[in-house]
Image 1 (spheres, rainbow, N blue to C red):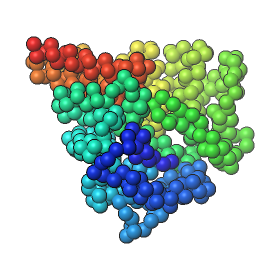
Image 2: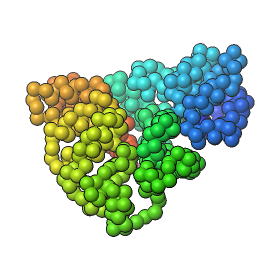
Image 3: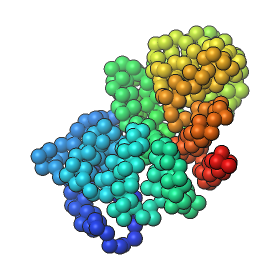
Image 4: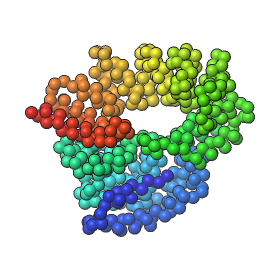
Length: 450
């Protein structure tokens, strides 16, 4: 619920003498923090979060101290506490903290993170460098890694190499990769949950499975998901209060909320009992449940992609038109069209995923599908890169298509390596892959200069 980045920063510091009084800052923050920690650890606050009332909880947090009494420490704390819960307010509060203490290194560091997230790389560079100039950033691998990325985005490649050396990635790759989540993750689960609960309470009971799926696989970072048990308990009580006993939606919820591992035969029977695999077949309206059914049916080989599409395509298309913002319907259709080789229908899904849902993977798929259209491809790639400048796939295509001109090739190389930093979630490709990319960039640029 609370993010105190300054504690993370402090963990990298030795006790030395700095122009900035770190002990005084830490003491002042600890003193002002009590009113906020008392609230966030209260039963009343937990109840609001359990009930999906994150906006109400945020408002209460903001008003714990009257505006006329807020200090730089209050604004700093609020900026941290709301970083994942209300990023717009977090940004505003950290700017207020900066007004009151414009040279506070910890505030400068936070401002750098906000500017970095927003893609304001020159501004982020300035804040990170001012933090380092204070002396507090010496030996901090995370700041050096952040600076490496913004230097690359600002085409200051030699500065990037120096910053990367200071990051000591080989010894600090885990902390650096986790820190990239702070800058590049757009996950907003609390507000997604709030929206789902509001919709359920106004009649969209089919979304109970979407709610349960969200809470059963709560994202803590790109690599880790775990159940939010207190949220799941609320979900079950909500279903009990809302669903009519014996109704189809109750059957769906019992099915999607079950944690029992079953055999292929039992799973198939459950789907027949729900009338999914019996008769004409009827898919539930829940996007999350539809996605889960497809995944399990494919895994258990109960139907082929062609059979699944023949049976359910009209329903899936109808659902996707009724709920054009529900990603899972489009994920299911895209998977099926890829597997049966229907490029025309896939192109329409990809375009919707790119332009309406604003999802990077769909833009990448659309561009790849247009690659051999010599007339349209260059402008399509350019448009996609404008929307998703940090896409590893799109920058790879840009690099592959770069003309012999050295300056253009150099820019494409730098952009491709910069795009690897938001892609550390794929560190399964190797724990030292960022080091490898930076070393390759050094080699390729040297070759261009020969």
